[in-house]
Image (cartoon, rainbow, N blue to C red; front, side, top):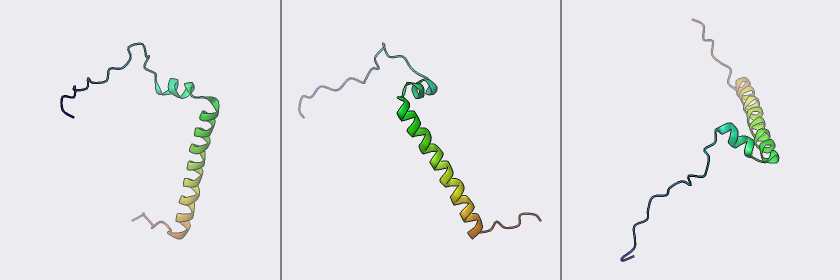
Length: 65
């Protein structure tokens, strides 16, 4: 566009407080925290199952020399 004004860089609101990760997590609604925890738990469980399955299909080589 001709004659468009250059945009100013975004300035954060000085009234906003920066939070730590734990404070941000605690600020989430309880249902969201529960859902997030269940998702992480499920991901870890699937990872354990997949690694056990792969270990039976592809046995580890003997690493002792």
